[in-house]
Length: 595
Image (cartoon, rainbow, N blue to C red; front, side):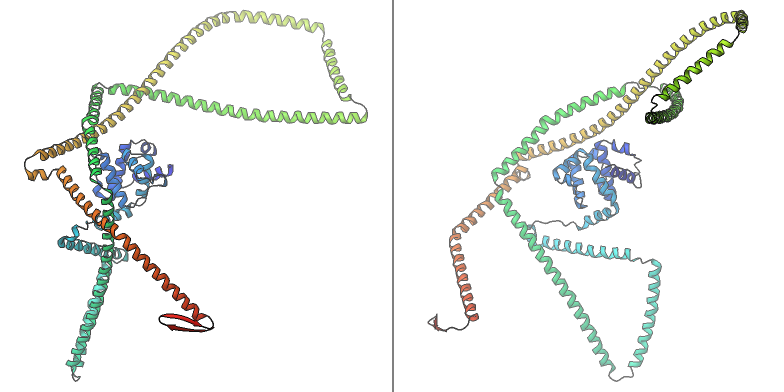
């Protein structure tokens, strides 16, 4: 999905769309905005699709897009093969439905442009078979089909010329070469005429050659006419098959449709439309008016001034610079700590290796002592060395003379007294400075805590204000789209209400001409026609049922006769293949075997 979105964003940022999206802004688009993007891509393929979907009903938008996607032969992915699910996804602007469509369209834009262009001329308009009974309509339809075939031929020739690679310079060179060949041929014809004039009966021979050329041209014309008649026969057979399929579908629909079902369907539609006009749409309109009033109140409130925003921005920049400096110091300290940790791990590993080596050496030494029968020798040796070292230190200390010690004590006492007298005023001054330093440190900590709390409060207020502004802008955009959508719904309702009023006026009007235009009159006429058709079909069904028994009996007799003839054929073939064991005599229509 991420690769798909990246491909869509890259293509939308290029010509001719130039949307300037990134992955985050594109993925955060609202359903209505995403539908507008899809509509812009479809408009690039087919210019007839240039529509602002906010001014169009959702059902009409979905129907228009589905129609064009069907013409472009788009097949939904495996999990959206259901047409109703795909249609609902188009209506609500579902991302899992729209992303694959955009990816498919942007992959083959040039190919789809060509297909959309051809669809305007090659999608055949189906004319009902009953209308084709009229000669004028049939002739017009035939001309329409011929023009469509001619368009196909011309389009193929145009594509071949485009792909042939001919340039105007080459064509001009070919024209000049052909003109030279024409001059040469004229000269050659003149020479041949002069040469033929000397031959006897040259006029008669020229006449015969002219007749031969005319007959060859006529032969080519007849072959071309034969091919055209074959094509017409093929189209006529296809047309007959289409008409037969239409007849079957119409008979099937007529068998399933009854006047009661049609009336029931019409009553349900009337009830649904009445509910939408009288209950649902007025409630939705009232809610939209309340939301609009609330939004107008929000918009009318005073906003933050430019100076306030500049002050907040400067404070935010100072905070960011301070945060960056702290982050730099933190990174340096963190790097030093990481180096210390790495060195500590190395030293710890070295210590473990030395301890392990010492234990191994001690174990080997104990093993050697046990083998030699002097177990504990190394321990005793270590203790003796330690005791001797202590004894030497004690002897050295005893060797010092008492005079040196007393003289040293005197010198130390004199030095201490001198230092005390020299340090007394400095210590007094230091005590005052220490007290002042404590007071300043306490004051600095208080000011720092006040600054930190103020900065944190301003930062939180700024972030809250930014969130509120962002939320209000999004709500404003949403409400604006809802407002346009509501206006469209109101206009559609007004049109439907006007149509209902016109229908009621036409129905209660005393003018028969106006009354015939009413939808109810048209439906009544259609119901009467369907009832007559149903009556004819029931009579035909009755006739078929009455003749069913005799027809089945006759078919059974023909089947039995066919089996009897097949049996005779098998017996005859078997008789021909077997060795002659007797003589077959035919008398009176019977076969007899005489051994």
